[in-house]
Length: 195
Image (cartoon, rainbow, N blue to C red; front, side):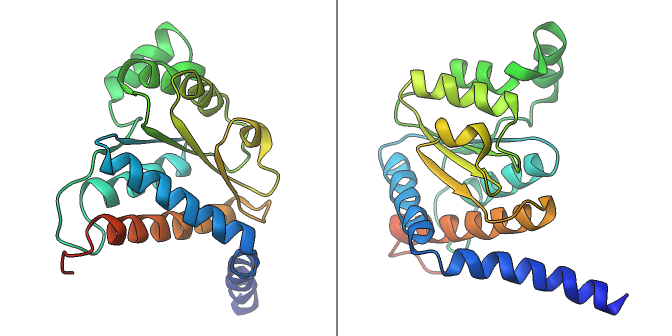
């Protein structure tokens, strides 16, 4: 069993090493940090969406912005779109689960906002539809996926396609990338605040 544990940890480390050594990937993180910081600076918001474990990751990252990361600073307008269960179940029942995020983007998102979608396959229909509505409204889209990017690669302004096909390894890297973005956005916007 110890060997199995070591293999799992090694696979996680290897995935992160591939990201670490990919200069274009790191540059995309910098660009996403700039886009998110700029949106917040202009009074816009960041909205997150995902399914299953990726919904939990979306909620986690939204809380890092709306709560705090390292610094004691004002709250930033960020929200995970799946947290209103009455809305979620009503729309899924009355329309389709495929449009749960698209309808919220249609209703509450504005030009200049950012929508971040997490999908290990990159093919989650509800996130694709949300990104399509976001594009129509001139909203920046950031996709967190696995290695191929799936269909999200065609609708993401910034795509973080983690170099793995293994869902747990992808999700571990999604949180790492999300934490990096949260930390750097916070530093950029609140340079004078103390930890």
